[in-house]
Length: 173
Image (cartoon, rainbow, N blue to C red):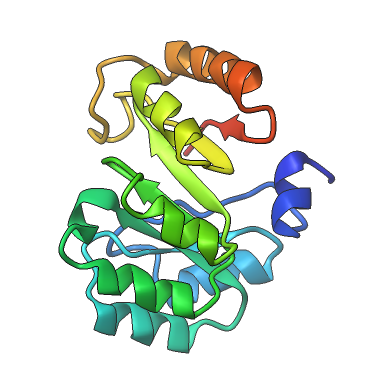
């Protein structure tokens, strides 16, 4: 099946493993990638040792996700991930601007998860390749009270009107 997602990431199936902290480890991310999807390590609150260990254990091309505000003062964790040539970097829960230039300079696709239209505009501004629109009903995660049902169409319209090279997807699960 060919989609923008499969074409952009060189994957067989339009399936992306959410980079869930304490769940999406090397084994799971590798399995998703080996099965034709995009596996993402859940770097959440990870330190540099965890990032190194997980990338040492992967058996397929994977990316990594981080909770953005945990990177403040811990930028070396991002540098360790970038040094491994990840398939993508996924930033959630905060401003991606301090980290986007390093990710872009490394030619690594940047995926930003957003919870409101302001965050979507910021993700476009910093050059996100993909924007994931997640509503307030997503397992208690998220900063907004809007549902995914109403958020996604507004983010899609914003992306289409201002950043046609970027695109939006909605998490399911």
